[in-house]
Image 1 (cartoon, rainbow, N blue to C red):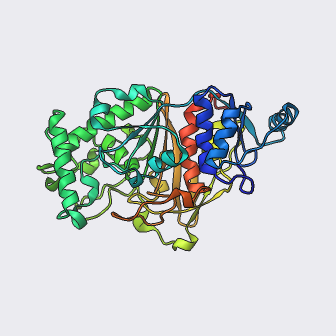
Image 2: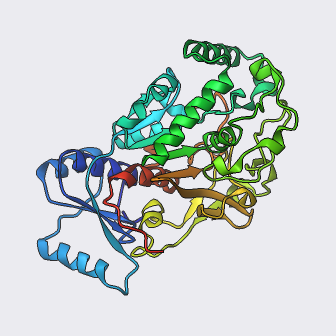
Image 3: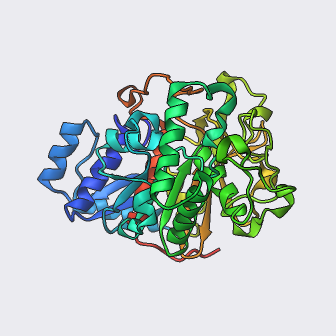
Amino acid sequence: MDPEAQENHLKAYGITYFALENQIKAQWLLNYRGGSFLFEAEESLERECKIRGVSFEILTDNDAKSILDEISSPSKNMESVILEKAPKIAVYSPKGNKPWDDAVTMALTYAEIPYETIYDTEVLNDALILYDWLHLHHEDFTGQYGKFYRAYRTAPWYIEDKKNAETLASNLGYDKVSNEKLAVALKIRDYVVGGGFMFAMCSATDSFDIALAAEYTDIAEPMFDGDPSDPGYQSKLEFDNTFAFTDFILERSPMVYEFSSIDMTSKRAVPMEKDYFTLMDYSAKWDVIPTMLTQNHTRLVKGFMGQTTAYNPENIKANVLVMGENKVNGEARYIHGVKGKGFFTFYGGHDPEDYQHRVGDPKTELELHPNSPGYRLILNNVLFPAAKKKKKKT
């Protein structure tokens, strides 16, 4: 998985998933040649690599032992992690949503990793217990329809989406969308606390935490839910309920395309050609989890925009790990934390290979970006539940 030897980094994750599905022994060699994968030799695996265009090398038993001995050396910042099973993957996304509207579904499809799409009905009926890994599509869990009101309130697609959301909420027994989305957020919270892994990008990250903080407070204005917001709702937020963010200030105006002070989009002063973020280095033997989640063939990753592009460090809880940051702009791009028995990762931005994705833009063709470092971070998270967990030592 190093930069020179691997022709298709993204599909290599699909090969690893294929191996796990077929009970082929697999190990993730952290920090060894870009985070390579080591498998028991099988003809079916070699055939799949050739079909999918994934670069591989055949090793003798002695070669493999030599590599593992090198990795196990205390002087090497490397570790070998056993991958045990193919995780069952769910993508939380509206029915009828196009796969290219979301970077994770594009990554899974391109890497040929199977997933199932679920939405509010399934979540509220406790379907999450069937899955090891959950991705949240770019959802607005606050019931404010993505804060698209100013620019798109007369657009047919906005009117139709709002109508569909209201119908779904009513059919599920809720008087308004904000209450129904809160119920969904609480179910997802319980899923993570119980041991699930949640991965979210863009507006699904901050809107999720905002919904949890406003569990007992109405923060939606009348054009969103038909009744006024609670007076002084900012002071009523409960930050103890959130996963990653604290002490944020909500954006009150429905005419502003922003949820809160968490997001750094409007505060950014970095040109596209200089927009990169750096992945942190961790001790592979001591901090296995963040090491897995930051495996890449480069430590410097191209930045990209979204409704929620990056996170204000002042609003990140002290127990949340910042795994990627833009130091020049003073922002966190990629963060991870523990909630109860489970884990969550938040990744700012919409599409790692579409710098400023807008409504109606053409889809990204991953065939043109088979070695994308930004997309590798997504796929690291997909494989994370497959790893045999080692207790964190720090």
